[in-house]
Image 1 (cartoon, rainbow, N blue to C red):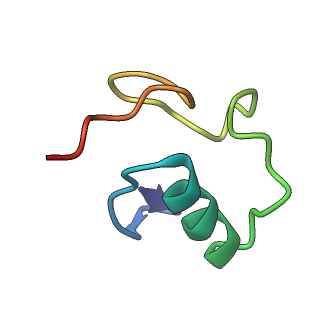
Image 2: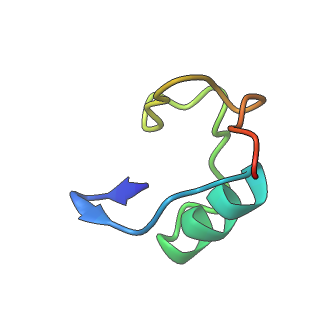
Length: 51
């Protein structure tokens, strides 16, 4: 995840994304609908399987 061009880390779940968003001051953002969120390889319901 990036915020203002700064890499915050990789989110492996919606919870991870929520933590990053909160740290960036965006905790009230609707990640599914916001144009500020750019999804790569899926969306808010799709996450890679963890081994």
